[in-house]
Length: 335
Ligand SMILES: Cc1cc2nc3c(=O)[nH]c(=O)nc-3n(C[C@H](O)[C@H](O)[C@H](O)COP(=O)(O)O)c2cc1C
View 1 (cartoon, rainbow, N blue to C red):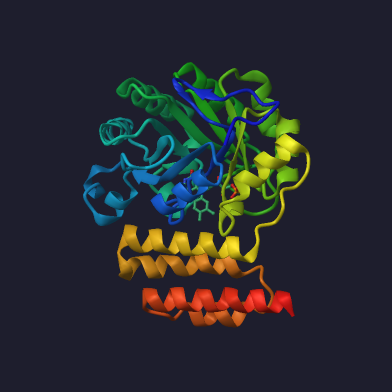
View 2: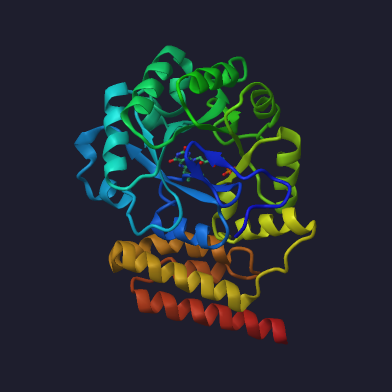
């Protein structure tokens, strides 16, 4: 996947992306199999699920599975979350030692569990603490450090420009902005005005994020915000090939042909196989359920299949059920 015509090649510090489309970090979703799939289908970079800075949990199975592996394909970007500057610096060092080529700091997560500890988007209330965290993390590692944040704490406190300035002055190499405030959670529509305002004033790369679901929207967000890159989260669920579709549209000005049922089937089976390998059968087949739900929900009359699939407890039964489902869709298309 070459860089997209008309867009500048994006370099984040010493790391150069092959294009300007980034797969968002999503806890519980952006595991290694999903990230690899997004990369194969055209993402210029993917970012890991958040890794907790608190070292007490580093040796749990959950943290181990969230670690980057040196056989990951593409740029190995790890996101860390926490509020203690020293812990954050150590978490960054730890991940770089294990192969991370870029560290992203999470200041966007609105989850209560994370915000209770004044981490994630709750940090946006405390610019002084942000400054200390950013300086410590940047000082601790040789790789580029990026920041992911929302537009502010709430609609009356949209302080993303102030924080972006702090970030730039602290040596942060790129900033992703999700066009919502902490108080918005995932409600309402993302707004891009604040992202555009930051892009006008800040010279490090700005990555626009929030509600970009189609190639046309991707183009509009690039045009309006003038952002250096865009980040896609939920629209890649059950459609990891969205990156390829956006790249095609931006390059050729027309939509790519829809994937055929055969092609979708191949992607789903590949994804499932990678989940079984990565997590083992017990966990892998459970995680497969939500992905299959996303892959199949657009097909007419798929409710019954999804109900049936959600109770299967064997990987070979899952594969068999999926093949039967796609075969039925193919037959329906022919008749
Ligand atoms: C299930 C889920 C998990 C998420 N986990 C993270 C996370 O770990 N770190 C983070 O910075 N953002 C996280 N996000 C936010 C996304 O990265 C992204 O900013 C948000 O979904 C808006 O982009 P979208 O409209 O393209 O989905 C998560 C979002 C979802 C839906």
